[in-house]
Length: 218
Image (cartoon, rainbow, N blue to C red; front, side, top):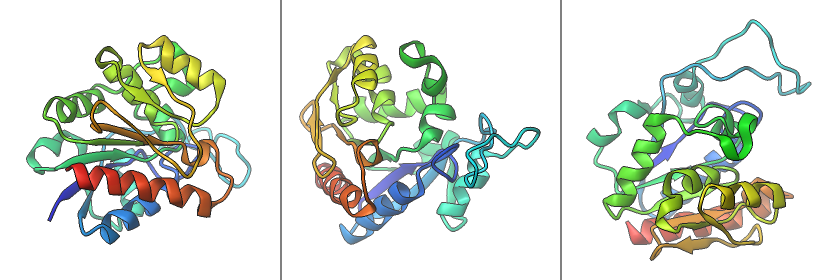
């Protein structure tokens, strides 16, 4: 059975992984006959957001690994151990956690950096010829890490994000929510998901296509 890593960034769209995207990814992997292995870095979130009000909960801290365990039903691996898991592919769901915890894109735009362990994982999978999937805003991570590889990604049609992707050396391709874009002989697959929405039904179509493409190439 193929083992597909799912790199989570917390639990909740405003400060962690987008839960719908993460669960749809896990479902699609299971339906495709593969095994999902959830992974997360053992770091504190950038901040904590009250998802009922959208306001920052000052003075509160949460751990990305512990919060990701909520989505993984407790079975989540430390990102530092990723190379011991013998994974065949890696998928990054979106949510602001990808732009706040796995990188600082939400705060720095085109001048952002990627968490070193995340960058190393993405690059190592790419260099090993293992497919990578990027959902929603997480394609900015692919752009930053793999820009010199002439990688093409999509975040839908958002012009600001597209400009930032091109500023770090990658190419942005417009895409509908129910479609995917595959780059570099299929090594890098992306889909807009909630960058476009509008509903979970629409998002599910693109994520299912992405997962099926990644699993087929693994």
